[in-house]
Amino acid sequence: MIIGTAKETYRADAALLTTRPQQTWTGVLALVLIALPFTLNDYWLYLVCLMTINAVAATGLNILTGFTGLVSLGQAAFMAVGAYTVAWMERDLGTPFPVNLVAGGLVAAGIGIVVGIPSLRVKGLYLAIATIAASFILHFLFVHWEAVTGGNTGINVAPARILGTELVSYFGLYWIIMPITVLMVLGAANLFRTRIGRAFIAIRDRDISAEVLGIPLLRYKLMSFAIASFYAGVAGGLWAYFFRVITPDSFPFMASVFLLAAIIVGGMGTIIGALLGAAFMTLVPELLRFVMDWASPWLPNATVLLSPVRTIVFGLLIIGFLVFEPQGLAEIIQRVRRFFRLWPFRT
Amino acid sequence: MSDWLFFIEVSLAGLGSGALLALAALAFVLIYKATQVVNLAVGELLMLGGYLFFAFAAGWGLPAWAAVPLAVIGGGLVGAVVERGIIRPMLGESAISVFMVTVGLGSVLIGLVELIWTADPRTLPAFISTKPLFLGEAYVSRKIAVAFAVAAVVIGIFLLLFRFWRGGVALRATATDQAAAYSCGINVPGVFSIAWIVGCATAAGAGILLGAIGGISPTMGVFGLSALVVVIVGGLDSILGALVGGLALGLIQSWTGTYLGGEYTNVVTFGILIVALMIRPYGLFGTHEIERL
Image 1 (tube, chains in turn red, purple):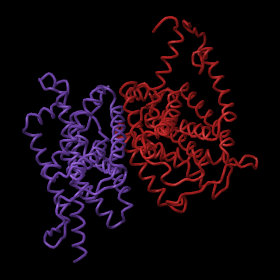
Image 2 (tube, helix red, strand yellow; image 1 turned 60 degrees about the vertical axis):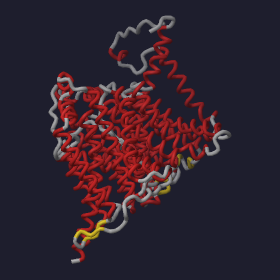
Image 3 (cartoon, helix red, strand yellow; image 1 turned 45 degrees about the horizontal axis):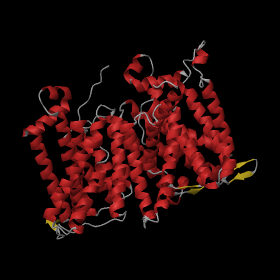
Image 4 (tube, chains in turn cyan, green; image 1 turned 180 degrees about the horizontal axis):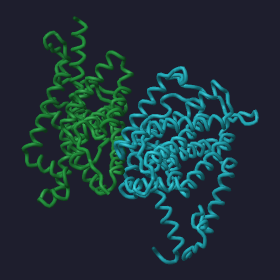
């Protein structure tokens, strides 16, 4: 049992990993992440890549919604902006993929700032609805700006290249997707050790108080939108390289709801929450498929039922977590940690 | 001259769909006014109303005069269950959490409808005659005219009820100040239940009318997003706003759909929403909330 961790310096207090078990487990996680592609088959590797891409987008949304308190239902539209930017640059400019990814993030961030402008005047639900509107307007652009987006047929994306080798297999893609995800998540975790991140949290807790304390609301709210959209843009760029084709319907409105659901299920306002939520919400539909496959001898039309059952379970997860576990999976992890830390005593 | 006539016909059709928008918006406003919950599942409740009518009228073979009330009552029952089951436990949580609960509810409803009736679009059995109606020289589809009349009557009844009925006054009192309403002896949880039941029943009724005009499918809940635009533009807590906003948006959608092309309706709708949010964030007729520390 750990009774407490005495910190002697501010630096130690603000460190990301404060206890020995935390450091050990993070090391184990890093090893697992390296070992994963060598042990998994293609199907599971595909899922892991999808999970990590969703994790980047969810982390961005968590910065905006979980840490700054600005609800957005447009995250998937920003992903689409990033994906289209990457696809367009790959097709018309032929620049290398790291440049494309950064550009995708930056363009998405620019659009995010524009969409965030109403956030000064409206907040809460009104803002959420403004982002819904923005995502529908963006969708219209994707369909009708055919010179850039290719209209309804979309764009085929050439595979990413490193030193002349094309990354087409999931194994190869894993090695660009995973490091970028780790970098982005570390960036988010470190953001909240800086002045900017703490300003975000102050705005979330009470924006008027934050303004009284000398935090310029407009600048920080727009910054939060920009950072969140940058994450979405990079995630969208990775998505474009992963699926290699993008159409206006690749990122439907439901994808935004999915990302918001992911951070609710995972736990808003925690870094690990976005990761857990993205992983969980990506896995559940696949698990349901196994369940339906397993049930198919008894249910003759199990494959037909799969899609509605997924929709129902998706909704039930959102409702269930909000009603019974509003802090999300992150809180469950905390409870488990507390159990082991206090063992043999009980909380 | 015929251009002018065509314009009038388009406008009349717009007013008809605008009345439906106003009716759906009314369901939003009722629930928001009483419980401060933005119910994004209104579109799905609309869809459920259409499917309930389909089940009663086509599945059981009931005549329309029996199936319509049954579907409306069914919508009200769903509202009661939802309020007691998942909205009541969320009392005191942040508005965004409750909003997300209704998003989840919408997803569950879509899944249930697909599970029971499959995802294929259906047409409702005809219960409004298709004989065309002429206002002067202008042609109006009878279904749209009936929808307009029903919506007008229902909204009129609601306006009167809010003004004169005890329950309506209780609802307005709850909307103004919950604690004060409690201390005056108003049964606030009861008001919540009533608001949800009436709101969902209204949505179900609007769903039947909408389904009669355009058929029903699990995706028809998208209509709820247009109704959402109406309430934001009109003001979340204003019945008058829902009425004016609904008719105006119906007209605008009809005009853009005819003169610019159908794909522009969504953009124009949401463009209006963004402009309205920038200029009057609390809607044309909504109350401006003042925040204090």
